[in-house]
Length: 169
Image (tube, rainbow, N blue to C red; front, top):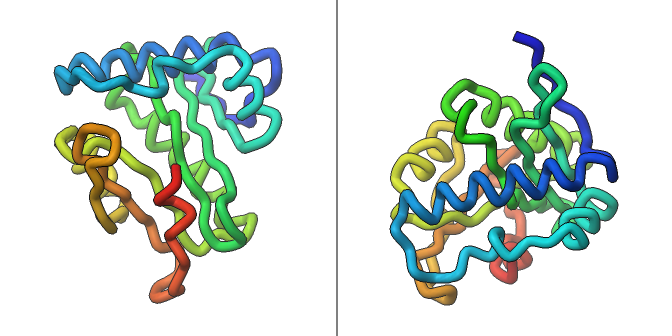
């Protein structure tokens, strides 16, 4: 099976947006939520902005994009993962883990001491997934109408990274 992970380009914008909407629609369905899932309000313009201004990685299988992850630098030591999703057809195949690993490696290579992300704490399979990747729940909030967990992966033990920029995401 041919698999390639690479940085997204402007030409990937439509596919990245399609994957985002596909995977976050499934997220919304799985949780039976009534709140607004911000990823579903994504536009071509905001996706293109992320590709140009942050790090967006895609996984390509036989020439088609089947997954995407975005990561941005919040401080010299802290990076933030967002809009991470894969096509439902390849869910649970390891492609998502390969994407996450690529994003974490990129952050680490660029000075990160910690990587953070948010997800709904009631999405048990996703929470278990992040625990399996050595993330831990730092804190929770209800500011968006659901229990939103801040997951953190420490790349250096006891680095003392200021996580406050992640609270604003």
